[in-house]
Each structure stands twice: as C-alpha cells, then as structure tokens.
Length: 162
Ligand SMILES: [Zn+2]
Ligand SMILES: [Zn+2]
Image 1: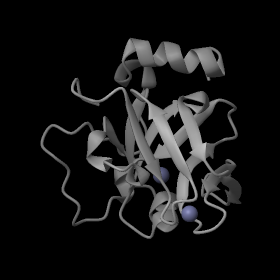
Image 2: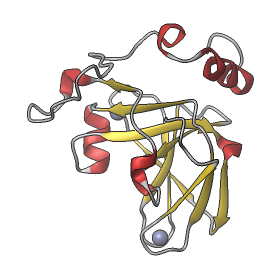
Image 3: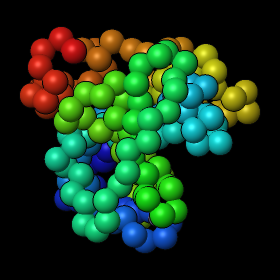
Image 4: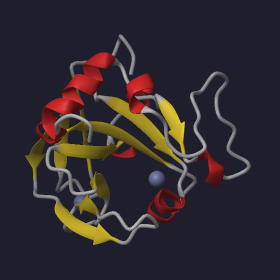
C-alpha cells in the first residue's frame, strides 16, 4: 500500500473472460510462504490482498469456487475463471464478506506491496526478504500489525474477535 496508489485497480484472468476492479486500498497485504500456497501456485509464495468481498467488483464473467484441501483442515475455496482456471481470489475459512485477492492477477501487480511476510518457517531458502520487512515464522498478532482503520473494516464484516 502506498500513498500514491490509484483509487482502484483492475485485473483479470489469462483468457480475459473474467475482469474485475478492486476498490482501494485493501485492508492488508500478506505475502504467504506456507506449503499450501506454494503448492497452489507452484511457486515460492502467494501475495494476498485482504479486502471486503464487495470491494471486488466483477466487471465481466463469473468466477467459480473450487474447494481445496489445506494442511490446517480449514476450508479454502479458490475462485477461478471457468475457462482458463486462473485463480483470482480465495475465501479462507468460508468467512462471508472477506476475500484474499491474488495480487499477481492485477494488471499492475507492483501497485500493492506486502505489509507482512507470513509462514516464513517454510520460506524457500533462496528467497531473500527486503530489509526491514515484517516477517513472521507463522502468523502475527493482528491487533499489533494491522492499522486501526483496517481492523475496524475487518470487524465490520466479521464481527469482533474473529
Ligand atoms: Zn480466463
Ligand atoms: Zn499460505
């Protein structure tokens, strides 16, 4: 998140059937190095922008929810393009109203930078985090790490203490 971010960002899948607009800014951006995310992306980590579901305006197409097993056992639905199957955003734990937008699907993925790196216990050894990056072996205390405004937004959709 930066002060120069535009009011919204657009993105989409590979074939162009799904297009979306993200109202800015997300509540928080996690770069997750857990094994689930490595498997799901076939890569070293995933970058998730946490946002209210209604901040993602689908401009074209209808993403399809696909459930995936997770190491924690918590449900995780990944919303994909029905044609090219690109993963656009996730719903971890089936919490209505909260989405984890995959930053790599933005037209300009450089527009959002991670606020925190999580699950670094399984970070691939050749990945070097930026100096002063906020990094956590597993997860963090949200009350400490999230801006107050983002905590309020989260509570507005999930209720207190969730
Ligand atoms: Zn597609
Ligand atoms: Zn993960």
